[in-house]
Length: 131
Image (cartoon, rainbow, N blue to C red; front, side, top):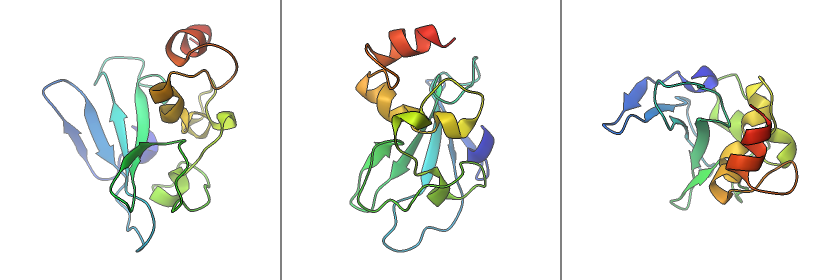
């Protein structure tokens, strides 16, 4: 599962696979980050398609990555196994690409069913055009 695979994997009877970023979270910061493969081992196993990133907040919520929160640190590079580097927002971080940083914020758009790159919805218009 790429940058989110340093704390082991957990699966459920429905087939979803969960993996956590296993770093230390500072007091007052959001985290940890969890990656969810919504269809388990079935393909395509790509961020923004069937792998999505979520994070725990200091005020008790689990939010899709891409949704801003008051306690998020500035985002960095999604790839060095640190929760603070996953906090990426903006439609420029949800586009068709093989780079996970370009797909990190897609969970927010998928849950809202909004095409981050234009008109229409996420599941048909965005993914349908970017297979």
